[in-house]
Length: 334
Picture (cartoon, helix red, strand yellow):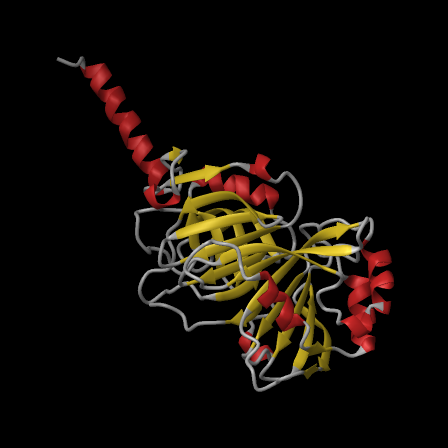
């Protein structure tokens, strides 16, 4: 028979464990294939890529989130997204606000540890993980994983929410936004990017998050700086009857020896994580004809961690909330 004090201690410990799991405390870090992860389990291996910009990809159908740095996966975790009636919006977003401990003004002052807001009140944060969508629209993470993720993201970190897994690959290109006839701009662009680091986690003159958006529907290029319109200009698109598709690129640096920029390309909703078709990703950017003055402004402001997004959808302000929403790709679930 278990002594009364021991039984009381056992029950208290078990209750604490259940509360911790319900609050995102996690079952813990594990080493197992992604397909075998149980609610609350996660893996974190930052040694695979120790520096550079981070991208977060959330798969709603799998209730999983993947973290990439320089195109290399450094983490994966189970999540809980928005339940029916509160579906987590799908699309391409950027983190422009982080709070180590936020309390919800809408839901009874509920604690939201390690909040990273990507669309209005929707955030990545530590929360309950029952194994199915249960939130009011946020993406719940295990408590320890949320803390680890909070420490590696930066102002402008892309958060990509899709219904299926997305392929990720690395591209090397002289400028990506440059065509062969515009290579004279590369030297200027190279001069501006050398020595720049990732944007800081607050707004400021030298910490602006840069997002370049190309809309095939509008035949327009829009650049957001810290979520606010910075450039808005018409562009040309060769073979304009052929859709551009939806593409996301994240700049993680430059090879000084070759002068090539190194980008991470994320193929949305491919259903798997295999590398994207690099030639296809490069070919679509070669169809863009962007005015020289826009190139000059981009060259002066581009930095590691900048994102470039192509879409066939309109990219007018009505598709954003306060500037932090970039591209709405699908209708919300729920």
